[in-house]
Image 1 (tube, rainbow, N blue to C red):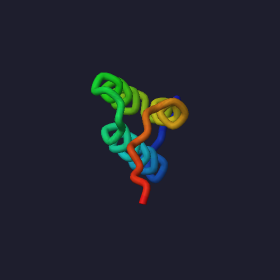
Image 2 (tube, one colour):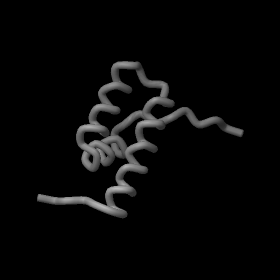
Image 3 (cartoon, rainbow, N blue to C red):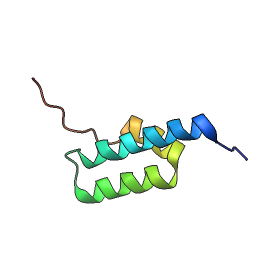
Length: 63
């Protein structure tokens, strides 16, 4: 079984937190936000990769 500890675990935690913040800031419906957050929380690595490829993006202001 793959065990992630130390620096690798910290990096995954930071990336997952970034994904969750971005999901919450997106323009998607509340239901989609909840599903994406659950995917990232329950499957930290696979959920993050799926979110990167298919997930909602946060609104970016054009300045």
